[in-house]
Amino acid sequence: MRTLAELQGALRAALLGGDARAAASAVIADGLAPEARLAIYRHHVRTSLTAVLRETFPVVCRLVGEAFFGYAADRFIRREPPAGPCLFEYGARFADFLAGFPPCHALPYLPDVARLEWALNAAYHAEDTAAPGGPALAAGLAGLPADARGLVAFTFHPSVRYLASLYPIGVIWRANQDREGSGALVDLDSGTAHLEIWRAGDDAVFRPLPPAAWALRAALAAGRSLEDAGGIALGVDAHFDLAGAIAALLSDDILTGYTLTSATRETLTC
Picture 1: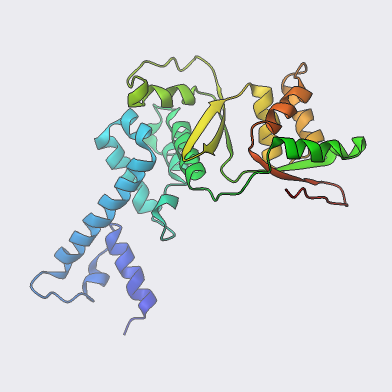
Picture 2: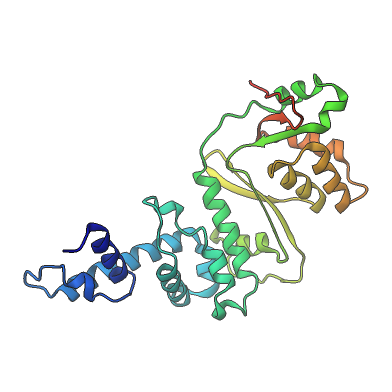
């Protein structure tokens, strides 16, 4: 007598393209051979998961074509089946899979396009947190002692993401949107991408940032102090307007508060 866990493991292997004999032995024929019954469910699982990936990565699909995308998705599904019940969370490792998938090596920009599409998906589904607003944050910062302001570590809205690429992935993404002229040629040597992704209203959006501004925001989003993040940005551009960049960040309503990175912590509540 097999345990429930053993039966579940056998069924999982059968549905993902492994040996179906162990699962078939536990299936009642009832007019249809167990192997045929499992094949129906296997087809449904693969078709459903491929559709999920196609919906999350439509530009990747357009770039490689439906047939190749289905082939890559099938290999990914076998290697990385869902780990949870929420299908919108499925595909987090698809970009890494594409980066290591030999048939994709001729398209070195493809994994980063997938990373952008996943960031947009994650931003869209991120939990909602009320932002206190730039004026409230600015007032709180102004009330700090001058020598404490460099210790500030901002907290960002959960939807905010930062992504950099050696390729113009934002341009590639926009060139493959119906409303913006799909199929337009993109010069892969036209420059790198430094993108900020977030949810604005009911849409996930992104925009390019200058490299130093991106470095500042990405460092702050990673939990670095304002002093450390400013040093990183100035390392990218020695003439970077740090004060102006901080003011611009405060005006964007993507911050939810701040803490001080010293032993004494203060949290803004609005």
